[in-house]
Image (cartoon, rainbow, N blue to C red; front, top):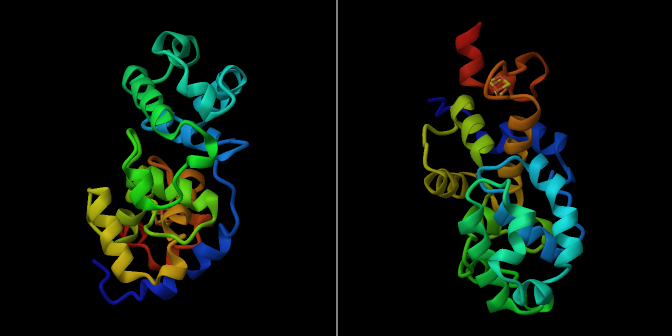
Length: 209
Ligand code: SF4
């Protein structure tokens, strides 16, 4: 572990590189984002982006979704992993929220909804541009943080807690920035060290040279 590294400083080039980067899910409203976030768990954003337009044509808002049944949704979601559970979460969520204007804007309200954990809530709050209450930890964030030597945690919640203690709140965009790096550069196989802004502080890279 690189306990000597000042991660507050070391992450600055990363935050700069991905400043203002748009989330890969192509949504047009907060309602669409919420639905897509639920559907995208353990599924590629690309698949969700390709299926979402037809779904949103049929169910354009929370109100329309709140009147839907699982059979109504089936043709739009049946290619998505774990679609049965995701469908029941979405229908229950829509019944609770009823209208787009009732969508919660904080961690407590979002995580009280079915199918929304801390990661999803953090993603939604990022796109809503409200004050961050946590740090996005997805599979990319976890892999890159482990490779860098920030943490050996394999549990997203404990990594999030660790980062929240280590990094000041103004830089809590770090979770998404690490995720972007993992999608673009630090891929699971053949990470592209040569173009990586974190190369100078990376444990994994040090072991390869
Ligand atoms: S230097 Fe390589 S292993 Fe380290 S974060 Fe960058 S791409 Fe990943």
